[in-house]
Image (cartoon, rainbow, N blue to C red; front, side):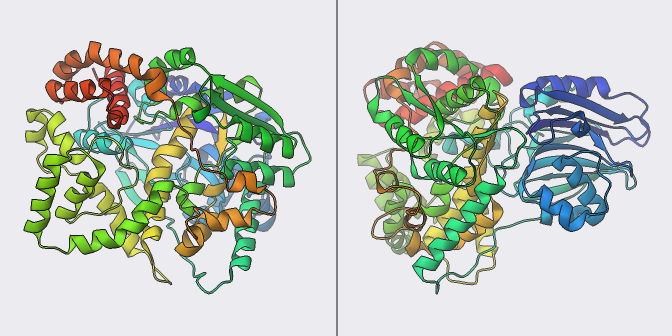
Length: 633
């Protein structure tokens, strides 16, 4: 796990040194890799690369980056290639290695297979490789989007980094708002590639690669997509064995490290499964970490985490978060998230990452991904039941749907059902994938007349539609269902832009690497291919995953009521958020000229009166005011 930076001059002749700028970029993301840093340039070619290293595999100086091969190719690498030892044995028997790092394996594989080397890697990664012979830069991001990668092409320069803040060390890049990204962010609380909230700063899609030369970006294309398999005729017991075996293999891969590997343990199914499989594959000490909220039993699962830790003999640590902890954390959130993320669960992730750092753990595994792949969310059951009715209702004549929507909206405005009726009246997709913030109708009210006049055609459904079109293009070897679509959207949209992004940024804020076994691309293909009736069986979410894990986990963990990673936001931080917004809202609206003060103030007053449906919007407002003040105002 590291931070990487690079600058390529697109001018035919370039005689200035870029090392000072690369050094400044490195410093801005030093938290991603405090163990080592490196810079390299070829001044004649106008290329410079930089890296901040968190040493995980091969801790010696031999693995220093940027790393240069005998052929003159140079790489900066962020992440891990879990099967690098197997690759060396199978494909690189005659290669003379100078290190035991996976980075050098990537270099060697590129020189052997070119860009097709990506087909052989099992891992999480973002890297940039300078091909000295072709005089071109090759960049890529892993299939699931676990490692971040951003880029800018501007003023005759191409530059990339692991974090956006590094770009602002360059004199030709200034922060400017991307209004389309903001519009979508208000609905989803997250951003989808290529948007970042900054004009001209773009985010790599997961599973994409890019080639850049002196003429600029030459190619940006997808190298991996979900591949469905047909398990419709397989008996349940056999499928359970495959699920268990593949997850076991994924955990085994993610234990590859030259430093100890720990785990975040909530006591839920997914994190408990990871810890159980870690113990199955190791006799060494395993450190596990849990957090709860002081005096808030409805938001704390520590007793279940302790049960799992005891069963699998881990060295267990826990932290009880207090209201004072949250007060101290809140002002720092926008420093961590230069690409915004309006997710209050960043609070427990921040403190559990801090706890791991304090106890000397550099690498942890997480259970991220199980709910999206196996339909583990309780509200998904409601969507599955309503899909047939929604489809039937959507076939009604437009004037009837619009009339019903108008009448319902008069009685029950700004409610989830009203939003569903709006979507149906506009012939939109039913499921948007955690669109839990400002609804489309509310956005039209809270945004200023000036903003709306400039952006008449913005509609956040277009983002969902883009994913749906990609889903429809996939080769299917069996009939797909509504649940298949929901899981696909969860994997493609929600996971990389919320959970994996969140884990990377909050872990890296404390120089801690997070690994997600559920995101192994082979396991993803398997999980997304499993028929819906095996995932949601007799009302039981994640049924096939749970039954496959019965051999290693007790029923008290597998079949207890799901709590989720929740935060007592209104109870503990409601007054803090409200008072901050009250104090700053009017000036914020004046300075940005984007929002309507009176409408936002109505929302704030509604929440203060006890209307909890606006709690997410309160967090969104708090975050946006802080974020704009930090990065744009």
